[in-house]
Image (cartoon, rainbow, N blue to C red; front, side):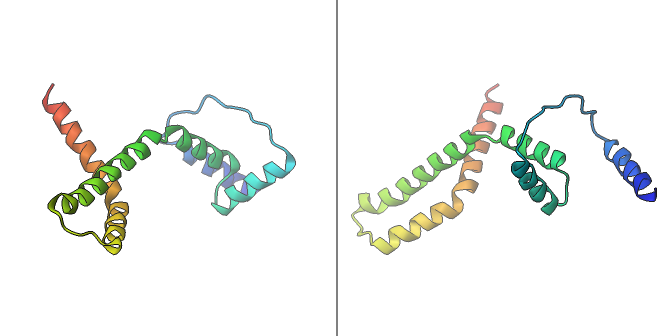
Length: 127
């Protein structure tokens, strides 16, 4: 009986501070699929419902445009780094190209965020 009371208290505590959830979406799974989802949720210390809700919302909010933009910025970084020695007539070794590619891979997200920030500031200033 104590477990039931504690479980109810926990459920009530979880509701405090968040908007009421009023919609549900039903999905049918095979027994094997349901067990697989239960195992994943359990391994993460949550229920299937909460795990599925968080997963679905995360996927729905994911912006593939960010990945594309990041890769575009990375391409620009790579081109700028490679064109400079070529324009000045300096030889470029395969090792140097590998180093530049590794540096671009490491810094591309930070650079993409900086470019987005610059555009946001320009747009905010132009209003």
